Image (cartoon, rainbow, N blue to C red):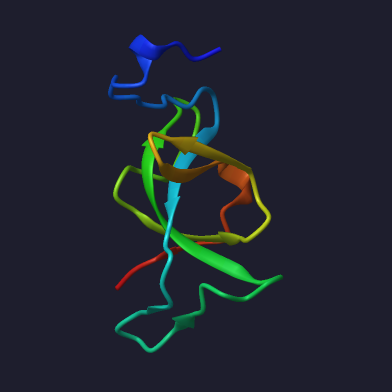
Amino acid sequence: MIDEHSRGLDLSLEPLDDYLVVQPSDEETETRAGLIIPASSENGCQSGVVTAVGVEAEGVEPGDKVLFPKDAGYEVRLAGTVVRVLHRRELLARIND
């Protein structure tokens, strides 16, 4: 239950174990190499930026651009911002551009 006093607080999300938090991209992404990742594909992939990493999520750091299935993980809304909480194993690739 959210009370009136907690609405103005700055919320953060700290993932546990091998979970990580990704802020999905709302736009079509094109890398310098020419890889185009459409944001509107229904069953495809989505890109985003890792914002937080659990202690067991190896090989990924905050700030990494990643590719993941559109239906992976859990959608969470924090202060009006939508993020996804995923297992590390749900990531498909890191985008190096």
